[in-house]
Each structure stands twice: as structure tokens, then as C-alpha cells.
Amino acid sequence: MLISKLFREANKKWFNVRKTTTQSVQSARDAFFRGGVVVASVVLIIWLSIFLYTAFYYAYMPSMSYVRPVHLQFKSCEQEKGICSFPQAYVQLTKKQQLLMVGQPYKVNLHLEMPESPANKELGMFMVCAHLRSRDGFLVDHACRSAMLHYRSTLLHTLTTLTFSPMMIFGNVEEKQEVVLELFGNFEEDQSHPVTIIFIEIQSRHIEFYSASLMINAHLSGLRYLMFHWPILSAIVGIGTNLFFITLLCTLSYLHFGTEEENTDENFSYEKGEMEEDEKDLKTLSELSDTSSSSLVEASSIMGDLQSEEKSMEEKSDPVKGQPSYIQEISTLIAEASSGELVK
Image (cartoon, rainbow, N blue to C red; front, side, top):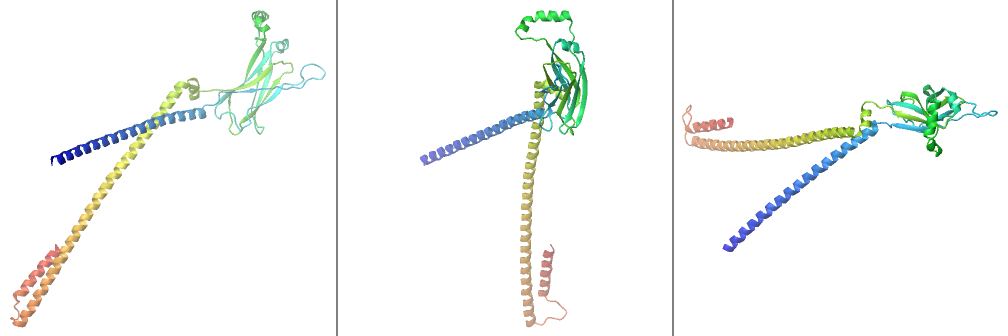
């Protein structure tokens, strides 16, 4: 007996130890799972915020500058030296349908690299015209601007030459100037006729130049200006805003679905209780109907017995006419009692 009791106690303690160990392991698993879900959700929200800001940046911000070389062409003179036509060139911006962003102002500048030669110094001012055309040849806009070399006196030119003469000898510095001419200061793309070709013409037959290039710069303002000149601050504000709204949306969704589940559970338990009560009522009604039917059967059987006894008594004795017998009174009393039970 003692050994069996000790054995039972040991089994009981071992069972309790196993139960507590299983519960602790299960709670640890649940905590680890919840922690993993939380960490994964946080990482996903952060990466989603970064992705949304990056997508918005590349969709909202235009390319800052486009540089296209300008290959000016002219007709050479047959009898004398020099050129016999205005230098001109067609610059193709893109082979696609559209290059510039609609609604964004742009500055179109022409960069001319001109030597400080006697011909250019004597040239004075000259005109440069530009025509913006779409792919189908529609003239979107045109402009003409004047330009000239920057003036430097003979003394300044001599001092500059003496100062930079070593570098000029080795070819690091040249006697040239870069003339920047602004053709369009605030050009906006037309969505119905996007610009794909720019026609450049220098209206002078005595100009000398090394090279020419066309530069299109985006003129930023407002939010685009802030996002370009302060990218780190803009990224922090943008990603933080995305984090706030995504976290708020996830929290509201979680609360909404959690309350819906609780309401469904409460409605289910309430409906279950109502169904159980209805079943109980149906059972009580069936029991009452069974008892009332059994009482009716008993009352009818009693009535039948009394009537049979009354008939047998009438056969044996002839009662006085007009006076009811006691058997009839008892039968009437029983009938009234049974009818009262039915009414109840």
C-alpha cells in the first residue's frame, strides 16, 4: 500500500511537472511567434515607407538637366574664304514621344565656345534664333537673342597672357571664352505638342567658334526645390509621414477586425442561449400537452365507467322521474373538473 501510494504521488508530481513545462514551452512559443510577427510587420512597414517615398521622388522630380551637342552647319564659299550662309543645326532631343515633364518650367541655354580672335573681336553683336518643334513639325515656340564676346581691354589681355603664359604653352589654358546665351527662360511643355526637335541658327557669316552645346535645366520651385536642395531632410520627413499613416491604417484595421470578431462571438453565444431557451420551452410545452392529453384520457375513461355503472343501476332499479341520481352528480363534477384543467 505504501509503495503504491508513493508511486501514485510520484506519477502525480511528474504529471504536474510535465504540464507546467508544456505550458511554459507553449507560452514561450506564442511569445516568440508574436515577437516575430511584430518584427516582420515593423520591417515591412519601414521598407514600404522607403519604397513609397522613392517611387514618389522619381515620379515627381524631373531630370535636372539635359545636354545635347549642337553640330552647326553652313555652306562654304567657292571663290573666297569664309562661310556663305548662316550656321544652323537641328538638335534632336529624344526619339521617344516626350522628354520634358509637363507643368515643369525649363531654361534652355546655348553654350558657345568662341576663341578671342580678331575676327570675333571685330564681329561685335550677333543674333541667335531658336525654334522649338514637335515630332510632326508643329512650331511650339521661337525666340531670338543677341550675344557678343565679353570685352577685355588691351592691358588686361596683355596681363592675362603674361600671367597664364606657362599654362598656355603646355596647352592647359586657351585664349577663348564661353558665351552662355539664354534662349528660353521659363518654357513649359505642351502636352498636345511635345518638343522633340530644336532648330538653332546663328545669324552671322563672320563668326568663329570651337563648339556649341545646348543645355536644358529644370527651374525648380516649391516642394521640388526643397526635395532637390535638401534631400536628407526631405527623405526623413517623407519616410516619417509614410510610417505614421501606414501605422495608423494598420492599427485601425486591426482594431476594426478585432471588434468584429468579438461581436460575432457574442452574437453566436447569445443566439446559442436563445436556441437553448427555445428548446426548453418546446420541451415544457410538449410535457404539458402530454399531461393534459393523459388527464383527458383518464377523465374520459372515468366518465365511461360512470356511465356504464349508471346504466347498470338503471337496469336494476327504477329511480323517480325528475330526480338525478348521485352517479350523475359525480359524473358532472368530474366533467367540470376536467374542463377546468383544459382551460388552465
